[in-house]
Image (cartoon, rainbow over all chains, first blue to last red; front, side):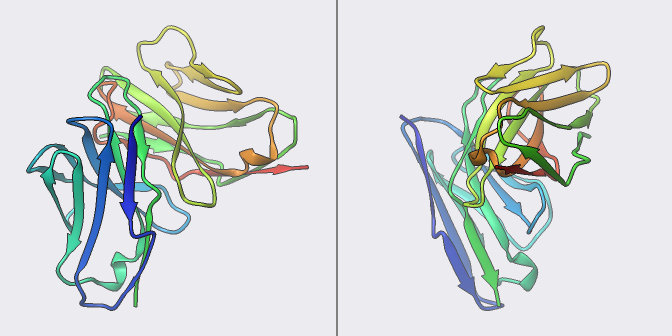
Length: 113
Length: 115
């Protein structure tokens, strides 16, 4: 069966520090991969999605970047965190079918102090 | 551009009763997909149900059903026989072309089931 791993679950980082959140998928190949951010009490904002290795689409201009060095690995990064980067970050994958739902990781709660 | 609207920030329902969570959408895409997700306090997003824009019948999954009214651009989630474990945030979401890429999420509805 397919599983998605996202870590860490909780992170507190000082302003100006770098960030690296990792997400890996098991049990499937060539998935679509996504990074979302959820502000407190709000909906999900799509940050990045990827349809293949090295292929990244950015949805909103921001202080973050994403990379996909392997088929089932998706990394969210920042060189220097801002206070506004605080939030709940969710990684997800989906299949290629027209009716493929997304499967989400457990999320990372990031607090920038 | 796509837009999803959930006008109910919070809802209460008595245990064992049915509840409807509203969702309206706007899109110019000829085909699209509609999803509902549940997010418990743990933060995990749980897929509940999917409706394709060309599906003739409303989708059902166990106690969940989607009341799809294409002309009204609404995709309401109906939960029958509510359980205490149904207390959570519920998000309506929409994707272009019936697939999942670039899904747009609504702001969510917080459902609380009362014993």
